Length: 390
Image (cartoon, rainbow, N blue to C red; front, side, top):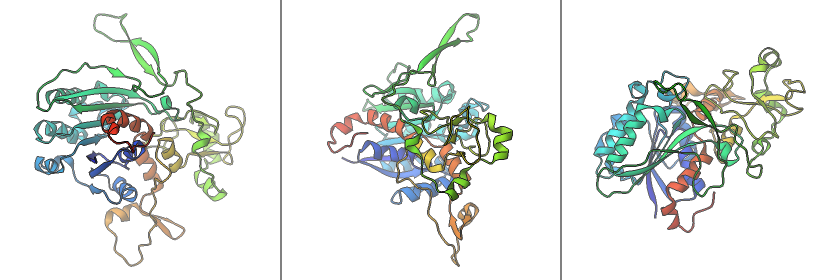
């Protein structure tokens, strides 16, 4: 049996690659995103999927009914919920499309059987989450909430995210009550449990009250599970190395703010959309020779991770690509593509290096989502003997 899926906020196809990793038969009927560069990359990797570049809330209920989707996946805009932002939640204009989907879910006659949502850590404290959970209960969905990090699965990249899995358990739209608690491991999956720190709960009238916060960096890692960064590195020739090398002047003046890792390291910082644009807190850099803290960092031994190395650290497969080099010649090209063209050696790229890092920073961990997807669709997988193991 082939399941039909709608992929909201599809980005560069992280959810779709997660289906592939699980090995379940899923037909992505439509993928929705308003970012032209993201859609270019999605089409390069999944040319048979219809990519819809329109506002989600501009499309009617009838439009979504026609798809009769079994699965909804979504990674709504994270800016309303980030710890660094204003945390306006549902009052932030960027949450408008997700609020529309929450409302739409209650109206649909053909509701999806499964829903998978990914967002930043911080979403779990938002009013938008509360609205979504209430709607899920009203529509007869059971659900599980997770806070997970790729480090738990042995992938050497830290990226704590909120995840929700929902399954429709009632054939009618009758209200059910679900116990709300966060999970930090997936049942049946070999993974590491995070450490927990006691912090002040800030409860009114109780200055001694504390609560536990998961600390994924301080967990005791299982060395048998942990991969080294060296497993994800590309072999760069001198010309390519120079493209990603960090200039000596920058290393001398601001080298102290970089998070520097080595090929033998088993962790790296979260890569954000500002990688290479800002030096601090946007992702690790790589010292390929010597020992960090002992041997001097130079532009000959220290570089940024390539966009493909970042993608692999996030679980994207080797076949993933950003590239479709074209020569415009006398052919007209649309204005969106023209804005994105980057000339290199008389060839052209539709998506620039800066855009690639930005798209990855807005994407998701395929390794984490694929494990969650396997858990969410476990009943379907039991009926699909040809499914591959992760």
